[in-house]
Length: 384
Image (cartoon, rainbow, N blue to C red):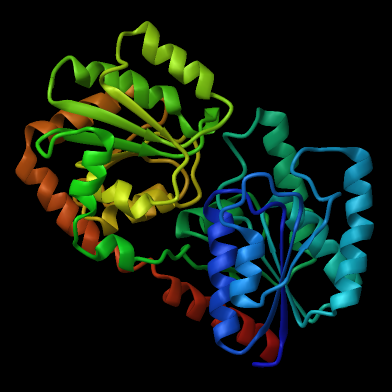
């Protein structure tokens, strides 16, 4: 089994949870003696320097130009042939596909190529939040079809698994649950990161900092965070709000902040790679997504000992213990986000207690645990 070749196929390795999982999982499997390869569509904003990743790990990364996220009849048709040729050339023992487009194309071509074991990880709840009813219906039909061409589907949470069963995508026996793991060490370690980061941001040690991290796009609920920040700012003069990230809504967000006179209260840092330092600098972490597979940012914040206010979407309720490690609110309700923040800002002892419990809970989401769980899936399939 240790000599088996594993090919990971993902639509893109842009910044985000799915890319982190593929890169960290690939490293872990390499350390276990596997011959690991990665194939991806064009990547514009990589999670990390991909050339440097290959130089550091000796894991090759192949680019398939036709494999793109957006629907394109000609490119999608070509992607089938390109993926087929790559699978035939590499002859993997195990094909592990990730995300929707790569998962649909890869599973079908993998089965045609006669790959021994095919695993698919969707990386979250794809059936809502990304389009209307028609789009959601098409996603469901596509997943039902593609599931027939693979041996195992891996959900991030039990909630996600229940979705697949309820929507008749696959039976329970075909679905495993493996949470996305993160490298916790840099979040758990104490040091001068908090003080240094606050000095860099021009904040005093006593300033209360509420943070948000993510892509500036509609699915992340950016403006719900801003609306809540506007409400809270009027109640607590010592509070500042941090938004870490970038994306297509950057201009609109800057305009919103300017129009409401909050330029001195909301800090935009752009995209940063030093997220452990960011998390340690915060007092509270907020997630306002309309859909979320698991919410890796939540785990990172909990590992840093921060209480969380989050929308109870997707797999988030499997991570946040409502009332214990944070507060869950409905999506699209900026008023309830503000109410939860006010509650925690007014009850600092409660906030500290939630942060302590969150740090303990974060230990359930490690890279080592994720790698071991995937190894078991692979081994079970190879035995079968």
